[in-house]
Each structure stands twice: as C-alpha cells, then as structure tokens.
Figure (cartoon, rainbow, N blue to C red):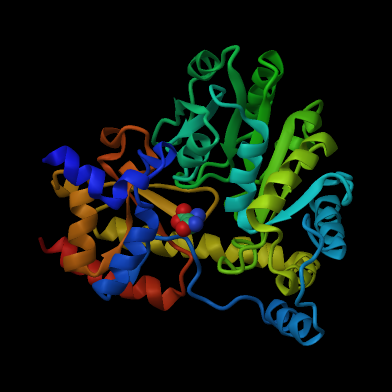
Amino acid sequence: MALSSLAASPARFQSDRIGLFKESVIREMTRLSFQFGAVNLAQGFPDFPAPTEVKAAAHKAIDDELNQYTVTWGAKPFREAICESYRRFYQIELDPDREVTVCCGATEGMIATLLALLNPGDEVVVFEPFYENYWPDSQLSGAVCRYVTLHAPDWTFDPNELHAAFNSRTRAIILNSPNNPTGKVFTQAELTLIGELAEEFDCLIITDEIYEHITFDGHTHVPPITLPGLRERCVLVNSLSKTFSVTGWRVGWVIAPPELSASIRKVHDFLTVGAAAPLQYAGITALQLPDSYFAQLASSYQAKRNHLMAILERAGFRCFKPYGAYYVMCDISAFGFANDLAMAKYMVEEVGIAAVPGSSFFSSPDAGANLIRFCFAKKPETLDAAGEKLLRLARI
Ligand code: GLN
C-alpha cells in the first residue's frame, strides 16, 4: 500500500541529489514575517534606499537600450570597473578579459565556482557556523564538507583542528570574511595560516567577500588573493548586493586565474547566460562612487550595530559583538526556550520580530540551539520598532 502510493506520487520524480535539501530557513523567516506582520530582522537585506546615483544609472541604462544580453561573462566596461575597484582598494592588477566573470549574484558565483572546480568525492573545508548555501552548493557539486568550529565568544578557531580537517582529498576551503553570521573579520595572521595549509595540501581558497566594505572599530578586510603566493589558488566571489544595498539586482562576480575563470564561465553560461545587462552598467556607477561613500557605509553600519546591540542587551540577549557584516549572533540560553527554533517561532508569532534560528548555520542543529541571528541592515525607526516589540519579550 505504502509502496504503491509512493509509486503514484509525483515525489518519485525527485532527484537523489536534492533529497536532503531543506527549505532555506533564512528565506522562510522572511515569509513568516510577512504572514505575522513582524519586523523582519531575519534575511540580510536593507530596508533603506539604494544610492540615488546608482538607481539613476540603472534607469538611464534601460533608456539607453542596454537591454539585450551582454557577453556571457559580463559587459566589458563593468568588468573594467570591477578591476579598477580592486586597484583602488587593494592595489592589485586583474585582467578584465581573463580573470573576471560576472554572475547573477554571489550566490550564482559560488555555485558556478564549485560546479566548475570540484569533483564528486572531493572535500571542502568550511568554518562553522556558516552561511547556509555552502552545504547545498557542495552537495550539488558532489563534494563533502569538513567543518571547523569558530568558537564563541570571539569566533576563533583552533589551528590544530583546522589542520586536521585537511587531507589528500581536500580540494578547497571556503572562507567568508567578513563573516555571516558571526561578524568575524579574519585577521591577516589567520589568513596566512589558511594560505599555508592551502599550499601544503595544494587546494583552492574560495572566498565569499560580499561584506568587504562593512567592517567596524578599525578592523579591515584583507582579501586572501592579495597575500604573497596565494593569487594562483584564490577564487574570489563578490557582488554589488551588500555594498550598494541592491540585493534584488542579482549582480555579482568571480575573480579567478584565467584557466579557472574559463571553466567557471562555461558553467555560468549554461546556468544563466548572463546577469541583468542594464544593472551591470549601473554597477559601473556604483563601483566608481567616491571613497567617502564606502567610509560612510561602514560608519553608518557601525552605528546600526551599536543601536541594535543596545536594544538586544536591554531585552536580555547576550550579544556576540560583530566586527563586520550586518548581523548580531546572540545567546538565548537565559530565556529558557527548548531551543532556537522554539524561540524564533515564538518571536515571530507572539513578539512580532523575525530572526534566524542559529541552527540554520550549523551542520548539526544541536550546535546552534542556543543561538539566534538578528540583521541590523535597517532604518533606525525599524530598529526602534523592534526595540518596542522586544519589551513584550522582557515581560514573559
Ligand atoms: N545573505 C543574506 C542572509 O544571510 C541573504 C540570504 C539570501 O536569502 N540570499 O540573510
């Protein structure tokens, strides 16, 4: 009976590859926030406007009829602007024709990279907690994740533990700095150690640098590609989304040595053909904004971090102070809920705040059961509204 009903169910057409996939918890929390009319501090996107000149450039690009496909790896002037921005911020020279591939967001950049460069059975080292896409991306590529814990409160790792995660099957380490969800900004010493391991085990360093310009309290982002000897083994994934508050535009890029870029371009071409043409042209204006824009971005996010942390601490959360990106991880042990899922559910349904349960960032749910992530890419009034609602939590 059970067998025949399974045989009749459309579920029989599902591929084995996605058998273990779950719905994205981050995006599910956004949906729940709409359903319950909650303040959305879950999914990481700003609720304030993108820069006026960047929006105007997008309007103009559409009016100027830049509405057809660009070359699959990205409009040349946009690739040149990307290279110019790396020259400006990190003093490195990149070849726009052979080392840059424009993608539909960093999300596509990461999956295109893994599909292009990993073989089934390869291993990928991932720091945990991690941004939820890296596991499904590895899974789709047939690769196995090896996790190395970042230890609270300051999210440091044990060099011996990191070393033990590498072996002859290791093909890559995925590094996200500034880090989502912890706010850790990896130091030059940590990156050097990672580089030494990549050399010892001859593997790639795949970096997600989407929060590169959002750092606080004097911390600065160092792209591993700029460190001595690492250029040939680094694949850098980035996007316009966070730096220019345009997460819905889906315009990102991958920087890799020419041979690797050639492979990534093939996957990208067959996956998506190309990123939105007019938005690539608007990206030129974005990347050419003056230094003051980038400084102001970081200082305004630092003020938002302080604002949200004050609110959360008043409500009884123990916050782990972030030094980059735009999230605060909090310990929820003091509230006495069964776990992070129970508290996130209660908060969205009863308190009116959506946040992301910590377990979504761990390979084993137990590891994140005492954590919850809040996003502070929000207008001050949104953060204040969240503060008002949190008073209800204080009364339970
Ligand atoms: N990076 C953002 C987050 O962690 C958005 C994720 C997404 O939905 N693509 O919330």
